[in-house]
Length: 336
Ligand code: PHE
Image (cartoon, rainbow, N blue to C red):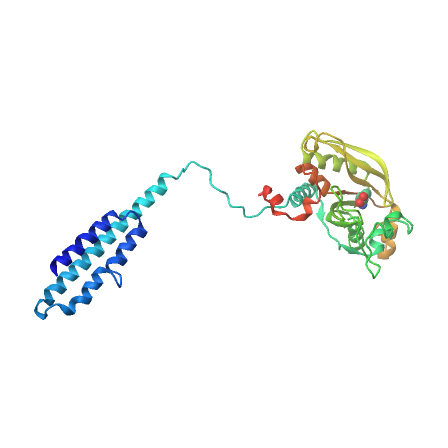
C-alpha cells in the first residue's frame, strides 16, 4: 500500500512538472484529486486496510493530497505568469491606440452652428417657425401672387386642409414680424420642402438659413456690409463675394449672392438670395397686426436666405447630396 502511495505521488509530481499549460494541469488535477482520480480511489480502498494500520495510512493519504494540491497550485501560478509574460512580449506599447467613437456633430449641424455663432456676434437673435405653414405666411404675406409658379401644386407639398410644407424659411420673417415689433435682427434656420425630383444635387427636404433686420434707416449698405463680413468669417479670408441683380417678390431691390473661395474649389458658386424688404410685405404685416409698427416711411429692412445642404456638400467634397440625409454610419463615422 505504501509503495502504491509513493508511486502515485511520484507520478503526479512528474505530470504536474511537465504540464505545459493550464488545461493540461487541470487534466492532472482531475486524474488525481478528481472524483474518480487516483488519490480518491486510494481513499475508497481505505476500508480494505487493517484497522490497526488505518491511522497511519490516513495520515499518509492526507500528506499525499496536500503535496499534490500544493504542487498543482505552484505550477498553476508559474504557468499563468508564463502566459502573462508571453502576452506582454507581443505588446507594442508604442502602437497608436484605437479611439472609441462616441458620436460626432453632423457636418450640416456643424456648418449651421458656425454660421449661427457668427451672426450671434453681430447681434442677431435666433428665431423659429413651424414646418407646416399657412399659404398666407408662406406666400401672401410675402407679396407672392396667387398665380406665382412657386405656389403650384407641382412645386409645393399641400396638405389636405390647405396648409403646406414651407417652401422656404422666409416664413420665419413673416412669423417674427407678426409677433415682434422693430427694431429686430434675427436669423432663422430650418427645413424647407419642395416637390423636386430627388437626385445627386436635389433633396425634397433641405435646410436654409434666413436672416432679417428691420429698424429705422437700414440700407442696402448694411446688407452688403453684413454679408461681406459673414462669408469670409465662415470660409476664411480671401473669400470673394458678388451681388447680382435678381427678382424675389418680397424684396426690392433683390440680389443673388455668389461667392468664390478656396474652401469651395475657387469657383463662383451661387449661394444666397437677398434684398431690401418690399414695402408691400410691411403693409401685409401691418394689416394682419392691425397697427402701423412696420410703417414703410419709418422703418426699412433687409432679408437674406441661403441653403445649407449644397454648401455642406461642397465644403466636405461629397459627390451626392443624399449622403447628408441618409444617416449611413459608414459615411458619418469619418466625422468622428
Ligand atoms: N426665400 C428665398 C429662396 O428660398 C431666398 C431669399 C430670402 C431671398 C430672403 C430674399 C430674401 O430662394
